[in-house]
Image 1 (cartoon, rainbow, N blue to C red):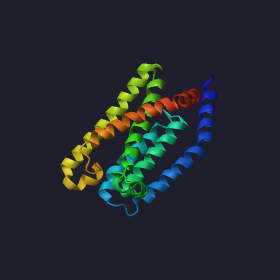
Image 2: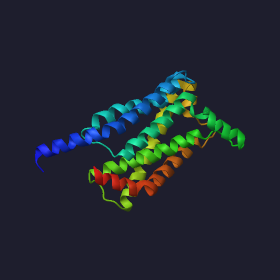
Image 3: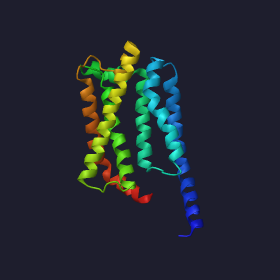
Image 4: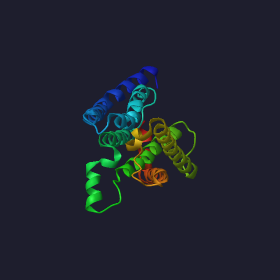
Length: 215
């Protein structure tokens, strides 16, 4: 293909993707503004939404050189919304999950489990895309295993961050930790993230492969 045709194709693809990304960005902005208005605690809010603030410029600057599949951009938006909701209320006090706890006489508010499931689910798909597109590993059992390992390591590292923040700030980080009195909360968080990584690959691998072929 002639170089001018390649430039024309890239310009055409970028133009066609603009409405899609505009919608995603508007949704992200709306939830972010809502989340930042009178949160339960601004320190906790900042800690929870920090991954969003870090990821957004990275996604912006890599859009031209390494654009992701639409599936991944939607998943990343979903993860960002989960983080921003948790930041606004704190994970232990999200109203809908307080209602579930009280209605069904559950032992805790389970919104943090949703967050940690997403913490395995979305990074797993990101890792899968990067590994396949850079030809690091082929499709098969090793890809599945390595993706799960990456997702689990990300979850474990996040638990270390929570520990460091708690050690540095004392009781101010209690809402950030969100253990809700469970001595096994850290282990549960990592286990749920691992489950998320497994479910993501089993459920979305075929759709992801189809979108990878269109890039």
